[in-house]
Image (cartoon, rainbow, N blue to C red; front, side, top):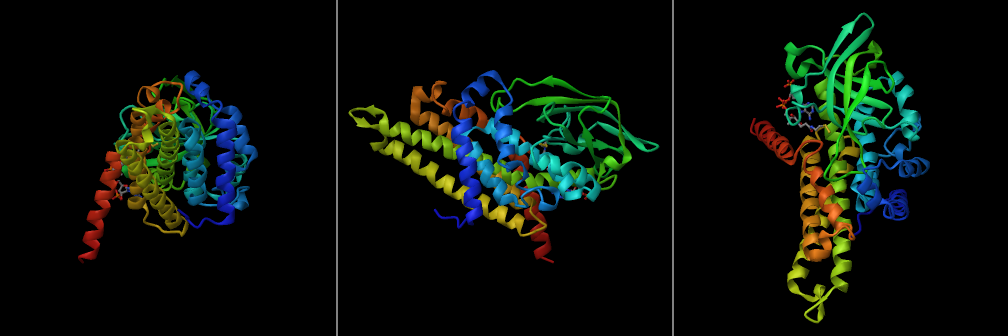
Length: 386
Ligand code: COS
């Protein structure tokens, strides 16, 4: 299908695809096995300017939007979602600054993020606050010209490898979600250390750690937006980033589908390549149809976000939910088509199936996405029936 990409978008796609094929595919198995952060690949992505894709030109980026970012993420995910998570988490961590930061904050942080010199992480989740994001316990207390942070963030992508952290903490517990605030915290700030590194089922090339704040003092100017806006900053950030998670689901589905077709053409049973059997063709037909539907949805939502649309919660949740459920289904079916071979580590679909699972969980579980969509439906009907 032709998605009428511009010449520039095709160039971004081809560049990301080339990096994926030449630099990621040869090492993805080893990175997965060793749970190793892909520093060398991050350097290549930085040299190719891909970290600056979504950052405005005035802050040293390429000034592109959600669609270009989704195209790059899709291509990287086709090869390895561990690597694409390490890359895409930068966008997640940067959105609070992009959407709500002051010009001084943007001048200070964005140029080095755009060049890939500094990696970024987003810290919202805690041990007792996952889906229930407003239940966070980490506090930030104003003491003269500084905020003092105390608490522990859990399961933070790029934790310890990132230099810049956007953190949501409670400044006034009595105010509920309106008592949360967002901050930018730099690695190396006294009182800010890293805890447990997680040993994960999939996306093992991405690093997931705890962030520990123990009387960590940061300048008052490090608040993002205004005090009390933290929950809104977090929700708007997730509205912006979830389409990219959908692009990860789309990319991994595409990768697994291609592996399944390649295998089914070669594998002979009952005297014929298994692709000649209708049972296999039907599975491939469903995979291919789902992939086109996901790509059409993701590119449309990304274009809608890039048009400056304000109300994007529902459609970005739809893109995330649909494409990542598809990613799980397609990778599982690819293993099924490939049978015993699919289950073995010699073939990449075993890893793809493990990697796909997190996409239905992080940046809001797909049950939370359905809640968001449901709430928006209720609001729309209420508005329209007035
Ligand atoms: N944009 C702007 N404001 C939003 C918003 C959005 N997308 N979503 C919620 N809000 C506002 C609400 O309008 C409400 O404001 P008021 O108090 O002024 O009415 C406030 O935020 C609280 O909203 P709500 O009552 O819906 O919050 P809940 O505690 O019920 O949260 C959801 C429900 C589903 C929104 C939230 O818990 C969520 O997204 N959870 C998943 C979190 C997640 O993605 N975690 C992954 C970790 S980060 S990788």
